[in-house]
Image (tube, rainbow, N blue to C red):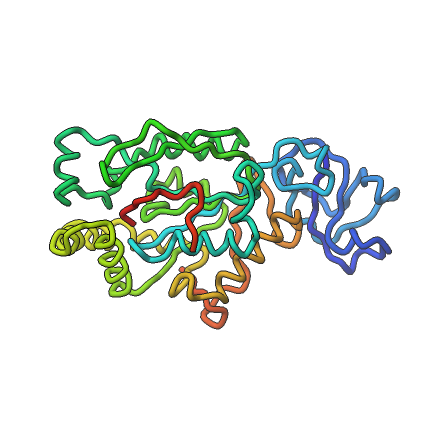
Amino acid sequence: MYACVKYDLGALQLPTALARYCLFFQARRSRTVLPGNVVFNLSPHFVFLETALTVGWLCSMASAGSLDAPERGHQRPFLIGVSGGTASGKSTVCEKIMELLGQNEVDHRQRKVVILSQDRFYKVLTPEQKARALKGQYNFDHPDAFDNELMHRTLTRIMEGQIVDVPMYDFITHSRLPETTTVYPADVVLFEGILAFYNQEIRDMFQLKLFVDTDSDVRLSRRVLRDMKRGRDLEQILSQYTTFVKPAFEEFSLPTKKYADVIIPRGVDNMVAINLIVQHIQDILNGDICKWQRGVLNGRTQKRTFPGQGESGGLLLPGKRTHLESSSRPH
């Protein structure tokens, strides 16, 4: 098992290129911070003792990626939560990320990055609820509309590297389909939904949280056009929006914006933000974990602040459907 220690480059005078990034040494599987400033038992790359002035964190390569794939064992995927209001462009942002990473045309069994929608986890409606939904009188934007237990169980299994069957939901009939979609182990998982950050237990699973912030008028116009293309009546669309969608966004979704690590104004139109996020994911896929301090401390994933945040970078602090996208969705 290899482990990685962040260190002060000035403390080392080694000619190897690997030394510029981090020291890899043989260690027991551990998730504790090293108390000292001396690294023992160096890997074959380093046959003598070296002093590291700044020992910041320690992580098992099985959890954070490795240069030596056969020895790394199971690699936990990097889970990214993407939230925002209805029609804010959450799925479009995820699809653009997939496209820029060259993963959108890859067979789903071999993808390093996958997209999963919260819309797949709506509860099974009773006959009475289904009748109301067909009239546009059911609130799909309320937290109680989601099966959080199934959602958490599915994400947990994905994080454990298991092959998972994800439910499918049909918004034409407002029912969960008997068919499922198989999600294979991946390095990065993008989980998007209007209330992705609402449930704390699920929110704490995300290593990076993105909030797509789009003007409310733009979101409304997008929703109207989208729902009218599905054959829905304009009056019903506007009634549902003013009765359920807008109040639910203000009460449940918008307050979770404070949990976001990165806020993306204008959604997919903000390519400065998208490119920064793509670069971050590429570093994860390339195993450059020392650069981003992708570690696990005391049994929990270390929360990171995304570099380059601030208005100057197009970020603010606090396409094509993939096989995981629903053919018809409300958000």
